[in-house]
Length: 67
View: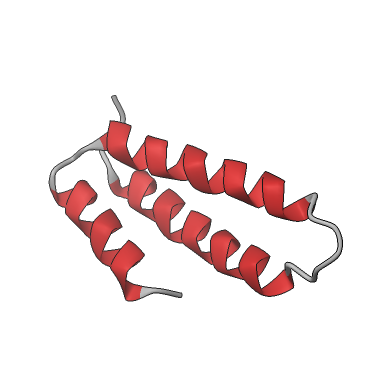
């Protein structure tokens, strides 16, 4: 997985920016849904990448104080 996403999540966690993290999470979840419906090519590697990114984002959200 790209270190850049980890750094972005860490930055938003430091800023306590739940909205930004939730937006990124929604985007990655939508991307994952789209990838699972792809035909004609094997999207396994992209699905694995996006799934790892979702895990990192969810871990960042879990560290924030509940609203």
